[in-house]
Structures are given as structure tokens and as C-alpha cells.
Length: 401
Ligand code: ADP
Image 1 (cartoon, helix red, strand yellow):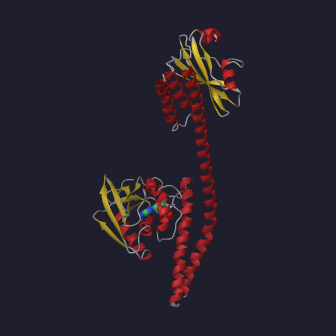
Image 2: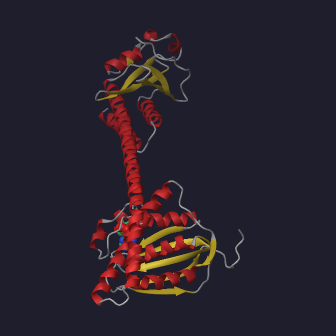
């Protein structure tokens, strides 16, 4: 008998586990009604939910074996009593039942869905024939009532946590949106004045020239951060603008690599290419994607290491690979890397200036807009990573619009 009881408890335990991934109360209740019917070897089952606002019950779930549609429970009937007293009620003969139910059952149990003062409703498990409930079955019924209520409570908590984090993310977006708008003008002004200074002071001491270069470099960095912030809110609101021109990808790659070579003096970038790919889209945005991948490759790899760029044809798309020999990406972070504001703890080991964790998110959105994709492979034993993107292309300069 104990073995049988344990077996039944383990069936309910499985339902408890399965219900953890459900986000719909009805699905959760359905699972427990079905399991209750199975372990009690009953004929059918249904559930009423208590509506806190209307202060009444409604029929929440009814399995397809239930032969009748039960009326809404009476104020002083069995369901209401079970719900108030939080104790199952066992019916082993039909005389105490309402006329609509009497025809279809001789035995039943009404189980409250309740746990630690949280009450959600009741579950009815019914038998066509008379049924005398054994002690072991009564234990199971209480366990079902508590477990279903706990599962619903966890579901509500999960939903609340999800809502709260969405709200926080929205507030964060709003804050960054305002802050970046406010920062945009002064940053542009600093950049403009540094340029004027550079032109006016053509013959300055090496020290002054060094400082001016540094101001320039950091202003560029600041203006990129401000732009990233602005673009995130543009992406979120669907306002990021894309031009449509036709450009050649290998030419663009060469141009960008030459451009960043100066800004990344501690790495040698090689470029291997054997194809020409005509792309229809916004070359400035694609340029940003490439710059981001190259600066990350440099930022997260040791001084003096190589960065290999290659361009190839893959599954009918143009594929650009950016390979570095740096810190790589640990397993735990691999799922989060494209999330907004995500930065790995490992990145503190890198030598580069910290970013905001937006570059990859923006890059992926830009590529998605072009019908493309962004992925990565982290090489084992800390030998770096390969970030690669795919873009639809044409072999001809003239692309049909
Ligand atoms: P940022 O570099 O500004 O932090 P990104 O969105 O470009 O933001 O990158 C997000 C995170 O992904 C980085 O903080 C870093 O932890 C990780 N990452 C990106 N590129 C690489 C790379 N080539 N090697 C190792 N880690 C990387």
C-alpha cells in the first residue's frame, strides 16, 4: 500500500515540476485535475475559480469526460463551504448532491486549491459509482489542493517579477533616452572646438599635440556612446532610419579596416577575401557593425595579438568573420551576449576602455533589418572568439528593387 501511495505522490510531484514552466493558470489547473483523476482512478473532474472582485465562482476548467455542465456553486453549498474551511469534502453517496450532479455521480471529492492563506478555488474529482475514500486517498487529495495552489502562486509571482523587470527596463530606457539627448549637443560642441583648435594650432609642441589627440580620441568615444544610447531608444521605438543604396562589401571592409588600423595600433588586422558581394542597404550602419566587431576583437584580446577578417560565401549569403585570439566568451555568458547592457564579468580582464554593453545588441538589430544575422563561436581553452555575420547579396552591381 505504501508503494502505491508513493507512486501516486510521485505522479503529483511530476505535475508540480511540469507546472513550473507553465504561465497559464488554466493549464496548471488542467494538469492537476487530470492527475487527480488518474491517481484516484476517478471518472472525470472540473474546477471552479474564485473571482475576488466579483466575489463569486466561475467554471474554470472541465475535462472532456465530464458529462454535464455544472451550475455555478451556491453561496451556502458544498463548494463554498470547502473554499471557506480550506478542507476537502468527501462525498460517498449521492444524497447530499444537487439535482444536476446527482444523475452523474455517486461519489466525489471537492478539494480546495489553497496554500498558506492563498485561495484560488476548488477542484471536483468525480465517480459515477459510489466511492469510499481510503485514508491514503485523502492524503493525496490534500496534497493536490496544496500543490496546485502553490503552483498558481509561483506563476503569479513569476509574472509579477517579469512585469517589474520590464518596467525597470522601460524606466532605464527612458532615462538613457533623455540623458543621451541632453549629452548630444555638448559633445558635438566639444568635438567641433577641438577640431578648430587643431586647425588653428598647426605648429604646437609635441606635448600639446599629444593632449589634443587624446581629447579627440575620448570625445569620439563619448560621442559613440551617446549615439549608441540614442540608437537603442530609436530601435525600441522603430525610429532608427536606414538608407537604401547598393554597395560592395569587400571594398567597405577594406576601407573600414584601414580606418580602424590607426585607432587600434596594438593589433594587426589581416583581411582575406576572394569574393565580391553587392549589398542593398545602409552602408553606414553596416560599417558600424564592422567597427564594433573589430573594436571588440581588439578590446577583448591581448596587446600584440592578431585579428583575422575574412569574407566568404555561405548558404547563399555573404559571411564576414572577425576572429580574435583573446579571452573568448564563457558558457554562462553565451546566452546573454546580445542582450542590451550586458557585459561579461570577464571583460574587466580586458585592457580596453569599458563600453555600455550595447554594441552587439545594436549590431544584431542593424543586421536583422538587412535580412542578416549575427552569431559567434567561442573557441575552447581561452583561444578567443569568432564573430560572424551573414547578409543577403547579389553577384551583380544592379540589384532589382
Ligand atoms: P561593450 O563591448 O561595449 O561592453 P558589446 O555589446 O559590444 O558591448 O559586447 C557585450 C559584451 O560581450 C562585452 O562586454 C564582452 O563581455 C563580450 N564580448 C564582445 N565581444 C567579445 C569578444 N570579441 N571577445 C570576448 N568577449 C566579447
